[in-house]
Image 1 (cartoon, one colour):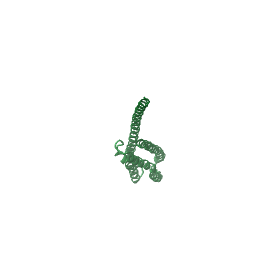
Image 2: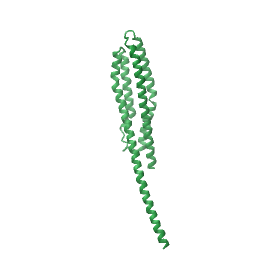
Image 3: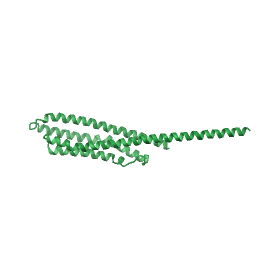
Length: 199
């Protein structure tokens, strides 16, 4: 009789353990889905930010150059301005190209983490390219403007306006760069969470 009671209690305990395991698996599945959804949104946000930055580079290239040329700066300087914008747009495309081709739901986590990590590192290193390029552009612009100041008195107002635009553009660009870096870090954290959940 005692064995029967112990056996019945053991079966009940097994059933309870089985129910708890089922509930835990369901919670893990729901948690994985939530993390994966957040990761997909993060990747989508990174893609959107890259497309917007690229679009801005291409849309600003010709109008900026036309304004500079119309205000008396050389055709060479104006052409360099176009090339600088196009180069920035192409670098944005280069940094994002692998992520744009990737579907987060179809890609394994290791590959996705590698792509997002490369994107983050590219944005971290972008200042090593951008700062010298912008300094060269600013010095060239100042030199040309000062040499043509007598012939073009309008340049007196044009110079501060250009530098205000340069500072404002640099501020906005750097904030966007930092946002991409933060977003990439968030996606990498989510990928790590998913990896831990799969182990």
